[in-house]
Length: 194
Image 1 (cartoon, rainbow, N blue to C red):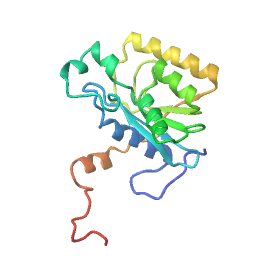
Image 2: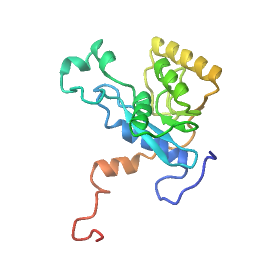
Image 3: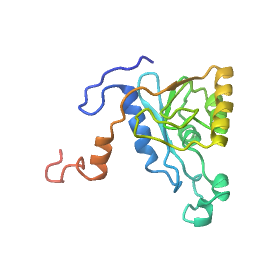
Image 4: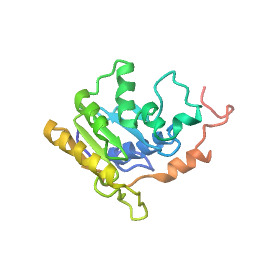
């Protein structure tokens, strides 16, 4: 999959920028009340195969407050990376050879899922070592235990041949903010196409 490929759009300059922005956007749907993470799986020809966000398995009640607090949340919540793979499998889509875009460096269990599913590359926004975003105004506290887990994931990715790449590009927040504020809302019915 070659990248960056410019696309015709006033908001996005490359496929990579588009998909990473999409991962952040998908993360807004996250059921995890503390962590809003999304993941986007993309085929070699730039088609979205699947998306996922932090959430409970299908059919599990996510309105019970106790299930959202530690340690219970660890038993109920799927990380976005795993959820995106499971969502693809649920509809019979293969992710072999695909790329995954996600804000965070995957945890070891997500790394195992990524490796076993055949995803060939993971593009992440935050540094695995210190949690710093590419943009200077983004500073995420990546506690020591998470940094150690990220190193375990990195070791598995290296041994398995899954490539990892720090995202280099822009996040396009304006379209997301505009969508959320209704600026880019659908046309009124009388103006919509037949």
